[in-house]
Length: 339
Image 1 (cartoon, rainbow, N blue to C red):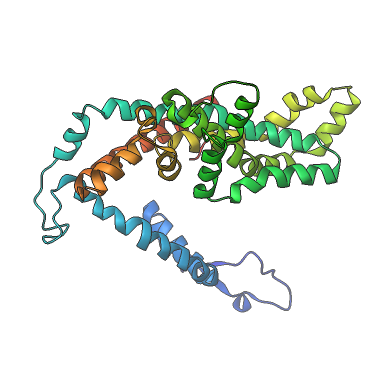
Image 2: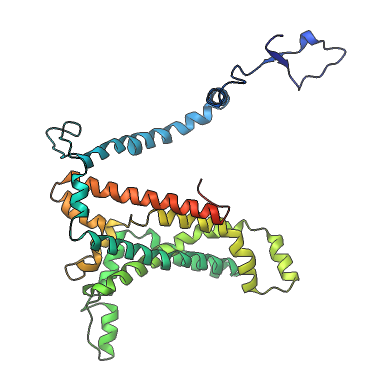
């Protein structure tokens, strides 16, 4: 028996004999391991769609060169890095820098401040874009809806430095709008950025103002994909707006909500450095010092690159563990997950 099979698309007609039908070569890896079959399928796909792979090549090279290759430099965390000796020539010290970080008296303060700010931002900042998207979806007036979208989206395009400058001017003890209002009613001025307990609130709510409108775009896009027939059926049944929201809108965008929540929890220790550092001052340092600012001050300003890499690697590992754990939990309680 020859290793060929007759193409199904060819039909036998009186004018077409078996000798005229073109045979198709069988997969030479049929019956072999799944790895061989997958490699054969990949080669066939590349031959057929090589133009698409060529378009994809720059993006792949970008991630390989700027994302994966630098991962090899994480070995600095386990060495006493010396510029002269280089990364691979520096002496190996094992977990010395990790132990130094864990034994540091400020370790638990850093963890508490970082987790506190991240959880506060997650609890407040995660549901508000969803609520905003649902409200915008309920607005029927096109002009008013576009105006609200523009007003809520615009702060996202303000740079962090300018946004922090606006917050500082707003809360200034002498010329700030809030303190001018307090002076107008005869109350004493308050240095809001000098109160440690006020720092988390200032940080989180300024972020809500800046990012809520932009974050709502994802949920607005998900709401646009909800079947309109569901709204028509609910309207015929006499459902109110709140009933439509809780029974159509929220279930319809629940997969998107779960995915965004998983991604947010996966970066819970990766709190931004720039904004915290710019809002930080000696008076609020007890609540504003987080892992990223500590690494910058102790690791980079003092040229202790190995220590800074060790702390950053610890941060990344914790985030990865949280991401995997939350993803597995979401997979068990729902049908939505990252993988």
